[in-house]
Image (cartoon, rainbow, N blue to C red; front, side, top):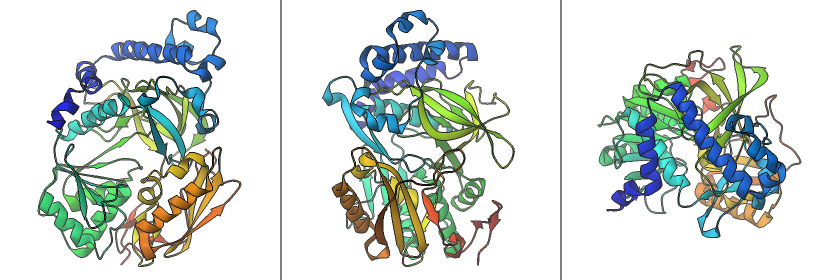
Amino acid sequence: MLRSIIIGYPPYIAKKNLLRRTETFTREKLNDLQSSLLNKILHHAVRNIPFYQRNISQPKICDHKDPFTFLSSFPIIDKNAIRNELENFLTGPAYRRLKVYTGGSTGNPMAFYLDRLVTRQVEKAFIFDQWGRVGYRFGDAIFNLRGRTPKKGHFVDHDMLFNIYYASSLDLSMTTVNDYITAINRIMPRFLHGYPSTMYQLAVLMENAGRKLQIKPTAVFCGSEKLFPYQKAKIEEILGCKVYHWYGHSECLALGGACECSDVLHFYPQYGYTELLPTGVTDESGRELFEIIATGFNNRVMPLIRYRTGDYAVLSESQSCRCGRNYLLIDEVIGRQQEFIVDAHGSLISATSFIMGPHYKAFHGIESIKVHQHKPGAIEIVIVKGEGFHEELVHLMKNRMKDLMGDRMAIKIVYSETIDKSPIGKAKLVEQELDIRDYLPCAFMDEGGSTTCCN
């Protein structure tokens, strides 16, 4: 019954119908569609959002018949602008505002609002559409290893509405891996879903324990981190199925995923408008990096126009794919790089699961965050205070972390004025002095990016 309600919810079904109708549009038709969607959100913003009313002169609203030209008159905004003027980005009644906290891909947390009645329902329509490329049907059983932690005394929590079984990604180790295998075999999910780092960790631990699943999943869904080729190969080898990955973020402005035919990310033109700004920086292969600036179509409560995501893209050389979708194609997004911390027992913990997954309320007043580790079972959490910082929320965050980790991790909070960043503005989430290869028995990556056996 509840699933029927979700499927029939107007924003969800409207987007599903739009995707079905426009998936094979020509580039010209997709451009016209984006023009219409962009025009609506820009005019909504300048008519209703104080920040844009102050920054966009009213005559310009009528002068620009082309929304792409009109867009260029909007300032590029970032997390600091939103932190400093959060209330000036909002419109609509309070009951429509759903407050959300994000850790961000570069350790720069932020609080913002989504449309309670629309944004997440629309998000589900797009995510399920992506997953459908590898066979997912709404209601299929999923075993989930991400940031959610089951209630005490439970190995898994079952979300009956979406038929998702949540297990802790923080407790995965050589001593517990058999429990995870037993749970997966008992549940018999069609799909597994987790951070790439966690799913890779599961695969390596299974390999080291000489275990295989008794079932054959249809696919493994990997999101929220960059998926490296060596990880994809190992997960597919051990779990015996395809790995599907995508790029998105909590702000719900840009979304792109692989397809049936390739691992290239296909960015949805129906979801938002993505600008790629040249940086003048190249990666180690000589490919140019473009900064991702995004404008979302699905959050009228707090529309973000020309938002600096903090992520960088490498364009695909070919902008056509055998799948027939004429979407923007991106080979790689350089964003949240998964990193591990080591507990007192020598087990690896995904930093994304531990730091970003729980979405602590303290993020509202934190400008930047980084984890530093120089010995197993002990970490320093380095914090740069931001607007609205509350020390009591940091204490609550630390207590929650201690509750999650118990005696496996000593946690110290350290305050700093700044956190170092790379030439393109990326800040590592983890400054790790330990050699992670010493704690994962085999098949970990060497400095050159190839797979190495560490036995």
